[in-house]
Image 1 (tube, rainbow, N blue to C red):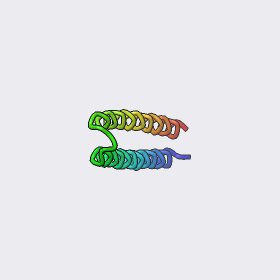
Image 2: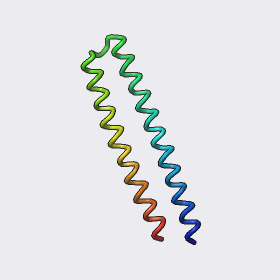
Image 3: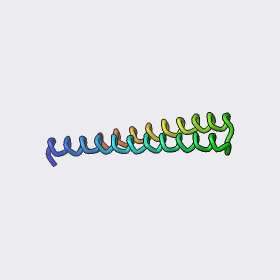
Image 4: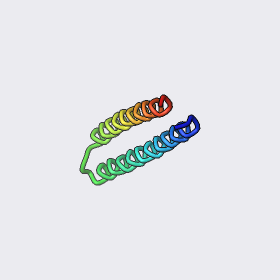
Length: 81
């Protein structure tokens, strides 16, 4: 495989990463809306809502970092071939 083709594949990996991060952000937004709905319906307390927000942000950051690590490793692997 020539250098140009490897760079094209690496670009595809970056695009895929951005798409997955968009999916992750959409999931976070939907989860946040669900937490807000549960509080409005008095199914959870305000403290529970903020705890949920904190946990949601922790998970989002964790998975975002994992996605970055995977994409970086894959790009490096592709470009080293």
